[in-house]
Amino acid sequence: MSIEITMPQMGADMTEGILVRWVKAQGDHVGRGEIIAEIETDKATVELEAFEEGVLLQLVAAEGETVPVGDVIAVLGSPGEASAPVQRKEPTGAPTRRDSSKPVEAAPEERVPVSAGAEAAEADGGRVRISPVARRMASESGIDASSLPGSGPGGRILRRDVEAAIAAGTARAEVRP
Image 1 (cartoon, rainbow, N blue to C red):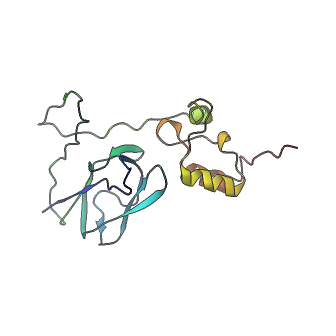
Image 2 (cartoon, rainbow, N blue to C red; image 1 turned 30 degrees about the vertical axis):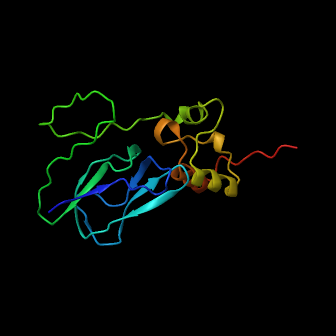
Image 3 (cartoon, one colour; image 1 turned 60 degrees about the horizontal axis):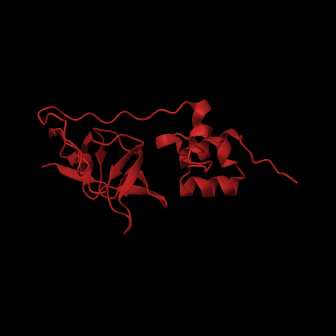
């Protein structure tokens, strides 16, 4: 019997989360308590644990996708079990245009050219679009966040972008008198 894994509500005011990264791949065996994905909220990036043992039969949500709380992000089941394609919930009030007999494909991930990353991250009225964890890491490492390309949705700067800058030893903040 398959088990649907849904986007958890990690805070009273959380309505959606960004699936940052799948730690396990489709077809991988997972044990109870193993980390299967990283979820980013408005306040932090957290690791999502498997509450049951089984095989990841289907990854419904794509990396970088914003998923409402309660929506199915993956299906866990027994080895050799086949998973019926999972339908994503339609946003409330949105017209339904899907044929329910066809499997749902994951939404294409928005690609932001590297050269446009910093501009996209600042597109919100000159404000740098950066996750709280990435902001703290950049500050602690002396990295100018506005110079980083963002790989998240809408060019948002994520933890992995700051980690890449730290590893490259680039994008150091300029000290001005």
